[in-house]
Image: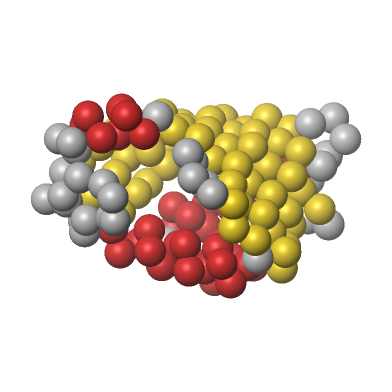
Amino acid sequence: MSAGETIRAYYDAFNRGDVEDFLALLAEDVVHDINQGGREVGREAFRAFLERMNRSYRETLTDIAILEGADGTRGAAEFIVHGEYLQTDAGLPEARGQKYVLPAGAFFEIRDGKVARITNYYNLNDWIAQVGG
């Protein structure tokens, strides 16, 4: 599978809410750089991150544009997040079912057909303004 195909499968699984297919696309030692946050390493750390996210947010990604590096080991995606804030996330404004629409992007490193690194980016201040923080 090419880098672009891997990234497409990653977002397809995300939009289906298929956590197991999603996690199967990650290298065991995946590096996850969280937007304006820390770095987590490993598939199980990513599973725990997804569980936290799924408790607080319901999101669908649209308008996904995927770019693939010439050597097939790196790629990027830009997309629009359509979400609903379900449960208050620690350190963030109170959740009341607010809806939001947010442009976002991600950078990927692909190794042996798996996501070895993902770095996510979105404008947190824009999100806070949309949910009434």
